[in-house]
Image (cartoon, rainbow, N blue to C red; front, side, top):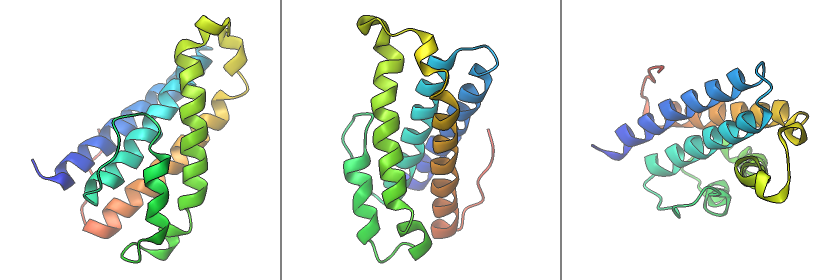
Length: 146
């Protein structure tokens, strides 16, 4: 499997994660929504890194590597202009994900995430949209859903 195929699989997985996040809201599973939103953003960011052949650490927060994309002159300027915002969102979502997954160890309940979840989903959707657009523009692939 080549890197572009792998990147497209990561984008498809990202789409499934965002769908999980959206479905968690009506069930008041706000912690699940935050967790899934972060996983969406992580996989979308990693899809871009994979497609460009950039190694990244096997961890949830790849913002330190992703930020280097703002200097890549071979990428569209509109994408590079969004990198800082995406980096902030990636880092923030990663921090919230840790609490969403293991907040019970700190005595944090699901209610804590009620006001955070909608914004986390918006941030993840934005990252996903930008990353999908870059991969499609840069490599001229037609992305399939699912």
